[in-house]
Amino acid sequence: MKINIRTQAAVKNKLRFSELKKNFSLFTMLIPGLIHLILFAYLPMFGIIIAFKKINFGLGILKSPWVGLANFKFLFNTSDAWIITRNTVLYNVLFIALGLVLHVFVAIGLNELKYKIVSKTCQTLMIMPHFLSMVVISYIAFAFFSNETGFLNRKILPMFDIEPIDWYVTSGPWPYILSIVHFWQGLGYGSIVYLASIAGIDRNLYEAAEIDGANKWKQIINITIPCLKPVIIIMLILAVGKIFNADFGLFYQVPQNSGALYSTTSVINTYVFNMMKSGSANSLGMSSAAAFYQSIVGFILVVIANAVVHKIDPERAMF
Image 1: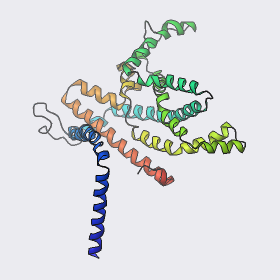
Image 2: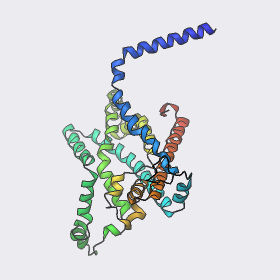
Image 3: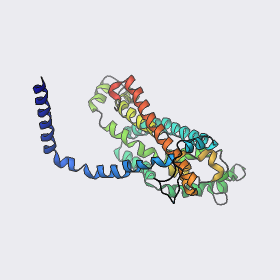
């Protein structure tokens, strides 16, 4: 029995070696990606210990005194923890839910356009905002919302006899403003995956449905959307994993980091940056604690989302 097990193991090792030798050139192509992953994803994980220390710049990270969970206690005893968690989660829930619907809707709409030149033109125009820097977008927003020279205060509001609004100290409208900016920038780019998936659907299915008398709407409901289900589930799991990770540029650059707007624009990413920018040793530990909290919760959410999908439909789960 032991000889058979050893023989099987030897055969498996021989097969693995032959497979490695056969695809050696392909495996070498992985080397740059692996190096990048190690340098920028795994080595920085060493910095997790900052969240559990009171950093003394004179002593360095390793020799600084260990404070355990003190940074986490200080963080969660402040009102900032609730504000940044609430804003991060609610914005991302909105972006995921509404974004999923809009991305699929846009992809189907572009695919159903009769003239391909019109479809390609619309797709190009919708994708272009994605390639704009958030700094540029923040200045475009400033051109609209500036208190003195903004287009809204100078042209639009006077038409309705409304007094000019100081947008950068009025927090109420900013959830709507940030949502509009987010979808304007990312709508076209986010629909690319679904548009590519639609292009891969067997056209014979549509032809058969058309012969059976199904109109475009029934074809979309009974063919397109069911075929998109695996992609939608994968994108949803990935999005849930990032529910604690907000777009830094959107929440920092567009509101101009105005302190008066923190109640509606401050998220975990901007909070960590602002704490780091303050430069004190205590803020360094607390900002690291916030970042660690963000990562752990994100990881847990990915596992939970995948477990739910695995329970409902095991074939659609990622792992």
